[in-house]
Structure formats: structure tokens, C-alpha cells
Image (cartoon, rainbow, N blue to C red; front, side):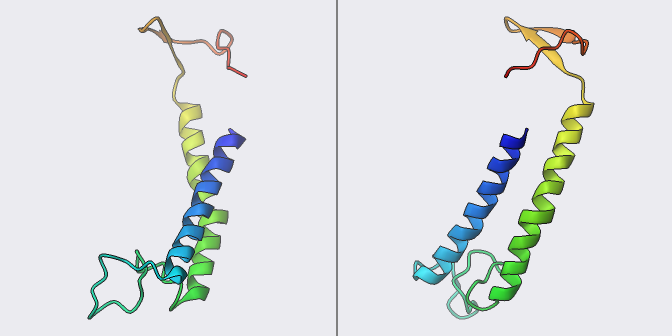
Length: 104
């Protein structure tokens, strides 16, 4: 499960990195309303140019609090739900924990 968490965190990290590259590279936002928007940010909460400090705080909170919390909740739900065994496309029902073999 730790590999999944690392992938989840890397995805969020790359998203924030991409949003900062997009903001400072001059690519622009094709959906920008020239008269209203003052930044080319894709989302108003991630305006790197105008509010860098808030975006850094949001990024840190997302990476260090929200992502681990969401991952933990999903892990708990998958742990609580019963494991099912499918053999040859036929659902054979609930599996006892002592019969369950996890892949390594």
C-alpha cells in the first residue's frame, strides 16, 4: 500500500509543479476572461503570480494533510469491506481470511 501512497503524493506534487510552470511560463489560459481575470491560473485558488504564499500553504496542506487523510479513509474502507474471490469469471463469494493469499 505504501507504493500507492507514494504514487498518490507524486501525482499531487507533479500537479502543483505543473501549475506553477504553467503560471510562470507564459503559456496562458485559453479560457481566461480578459476583462475580469488578472492571472492566467487555471483555478482561482491556485494563482501563483498573485498569491504565491497562499498557494504554497495550500500545496503543503494538500500534500501533508489532505492526501494522507483521503488515502487513509480509502484504505480503511477497503479494509472493512469483505474480500471476494473470483475464479474463472465466476464469483465464489466471501473468502475467509485464512484462505486469502495476497500477491507479493
